[in-house]
Length: 141
Image 1 (cartoon, helix red, strand yellow):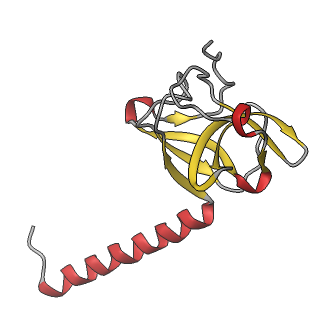
Image 2 (cartoon, rainbow, N blue to C red):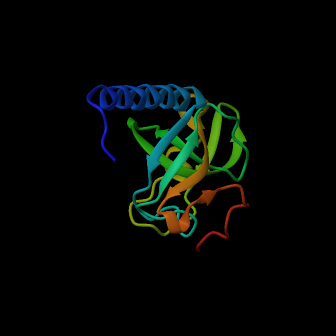
């Protein structure tokens, strides 16, 4: 198919406008994309998994959550919300034997302001994509 000269610019402009609207909708949705590194959340989450996090949504016990590390707020961590305590959430790794794992056993409950929100879905890799609404898997010893 051949396009007329003016039509290509109009189509490109429409694509840019649509991308802009999608970006605004994404931002307003409160969704954050986060990559998993390390083995602390095995078997539920693996290094290389990409997750969608609902920033600001209520957290429930059993949710996988993303939080800022209490000792380094520039670093994000993915952990299991075990219980709410006064002032914060007790967050644990599913795999307590993971090399270098750090969780509330090391730094105590994470203040509410540092817990960004629950993980709602894994979107990569495609073969493991889906909503994360099931109860947490059994923890590795």
